[in-house]
Amino acid sequence: MSLLTRFVLPALAAAGTAVAASCSASATTIQNQGDATALAACKTFSGSVVIATGTTDQINIPNVQKIDGDFTVTNVSLITSIGADSLTEITGKFTLNEVQVLTSLNFPRLAAVDDIEWNALPNLQQLTFTTTVTKASTINIQNTELNSLEGIDLETVDTFYIANNRYLNDITLQLTQVGNALTLEANNPAVNVSFPNMIWANNMTFRNCSSISIPSLESINGSLGFYGNDIESFIGANLTTVGKDLSFVSNTKLANISLPLLKSVGGGFTVANNTDLGQVDGFTSLQKVVGAVDFNGNFSDVALPGLKDVQGAFNIQSTGDLTKQCAHFSDLKDSSVIKGDYVCEGKVSHPGGAGTTPTATASGAKASKTGAAGRVEISSAVMGVSGLIAAFFGLL
Image 1 (cartoon, rainbow, N blue to C red):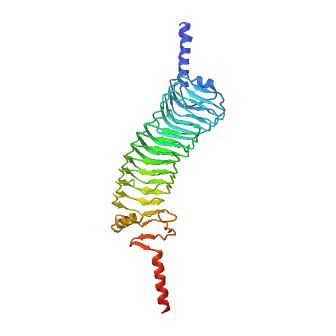
Image 2 (image 1 turned 30 degrees about the vertical axis):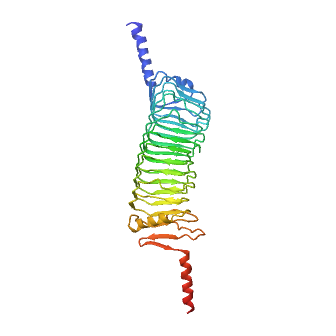
Image 3 (image 1 turned 60 degrees about the vertical axis):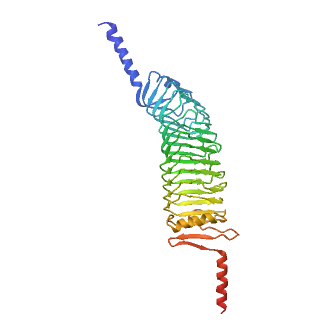
């Protein structure tokens, strides 16, 4: 047997086996750039990749196209740059947590991730995701210095949570649907939000946004809420149904709400404490509210011309004069369109939510309550006359 047959070929075979083995493990830990370079022979690494806590090198994983597992960087306080020049897919979670001095995230070919979970990246200002991530089931990005989400542009997502990114001034994605929940809160107050292709979502919550555009939205299976935003207008020209609650609360600059095709709200419908909202009249097609209608604020006009069924309480309180409007809603209460407890009062000094008692202004507005028996009104003028009559008969 030749030397080649006896020694060289078996050695090559063993080397090949070693390379294959190095591309598969439950997890591999990268301590330095040398460890990252050692993965270069793997097009696919089957297992999770973890960058060790004490790593100080700038890390680039060369040649690897797929990580069939998680990619995790947690509590790595001295690393400034992380990248993978050929990586297109991470089948598990992409986690970055407490990576305090990270300034560069360079994944030019990354297109698909199961979950993105990033938190506490106070020096990360931008992404180098040239190809753009277009597939992910969860996006959770908190406490970064990102000024945009350029490099992430999904069509569908289950959970999308973006919070406490104080320099984020633009969130624009081609999302068409949200399977679980979309929440934006406590980012830059000047952030502009645009989802031009969004058709439906399960739940959506917006807080602390400067503008919100969802022109194609047709239905919400769960709840839709706007809280403490600086938006001046919200127009949902195609929205027809909200499965649970619909809320506009404490949006101090909001002057216009227009949902002209909205027909039903499956939970409560709240419009409260929107300081600049003078008219609540943008719901011309609304027919049914399964929960409570609860409007309070400074408006002088409120109209729900298509209303046919309110199964919960009905509370409207405003500092403005609503004499004509409340007369109309009183008729709806009397005809059992409104089935729950009823309050409708204008000229209220401190308008409150459902369950509160209206407090009249100095001009003497009426306070109204309605239980099962119907509407009860007692004015200060009537009480005054009654007191005089009682006093007169007491002298006889």
